[in-house]
Length: 303
Image 1 (cartoon, rainbow, N blue to C red):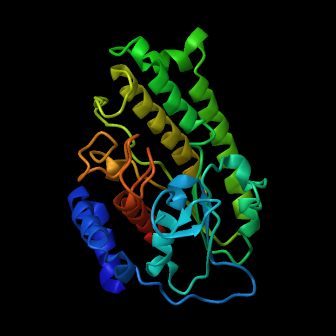
Image 2: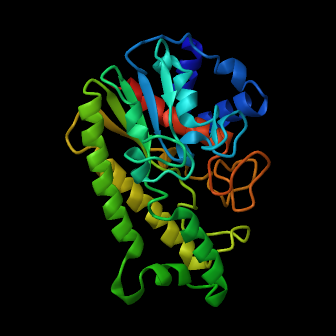
């Protein structure tokens, strides 16, 4: 396990290393061996590591489903982290769920209880990825595809969401930031000794702003969607770095630049709207989740 964790850190430091390590482990079917489950601790006082979040944390669409309703899998970054030295000796509670908004932290989602209810005073590590569904991520992408034919060379989706001088998605991001602030306060109240890692979203769209034919958006809307992703990440980072030294931000955007949904399939870590087998559109594939796990793992190890 020590050898593996050293490789994981090395992988995070350069994109090339992540490409090699992730592709080797996952495409060769070696993930189950490399990520062998560490011995779990048992505690009557509750889990030591709790994973909160949406489909980007749950590993939605990937193999190894552990909860059908939430499309929670063993390939999600939180599950991967739980099998490294960061999870060694810790009981793991994964309550991430596809479709979760920040409301799911305090309210039921289908048959699932509020995610924050999984926290206890014994919790020592929390990871959190939320906000995309508050923006109406799926609806935004659908809208961008629908309006693209009206102005293929322009930015019709940006115009749609900024009509009449309003920045609809910017306002939603402001709301998310406030809710994440409240969530972090509540996490600290429930689990005062926990290290909390707010995990950002990866680079879904080309960082250059130049799109591709495979993704049916107008040319100018690729830059718009890239900027929305960055704005959401900046909001999450502001909350994570607001002063509490026990809260950190894991930047998964930087490590996934160049591996967005417009890249060739063999270098793509985020699936396009026409996803590959056992993946989900506009979501990280197994190597993408590995990269997110690497970024998260490095933040966990920092004192």
